[in-house]
Image (cartoon, rainbow, N blue to C red; front, side):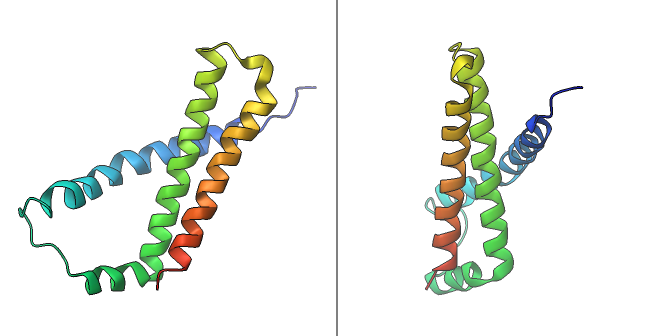
Length: 117
């Protein structure tokens, strides 16, 4: 009998996180790091940004983007430690630390999005 593994689930999260991050983070970086500060586009007012951030769909979008991005990082970093640094013998500890950090970061993101005043 083959040994059951959770690896397909983590590869699916890795893929989803990579796609979401590759599609949406550059747009946000362009807007908030270049276009608004350099005056290429009229920046939104503080009140309109707060109104947008209080929208549940925006909060869900940001939470999914943060969570999938963090789990993408965790899976990539885990396999980098396994393959490049040859630390496969520490597999359980590395998995716990990588995915635990992603879970903790997701919790912080959820907390911050939930408490936007």
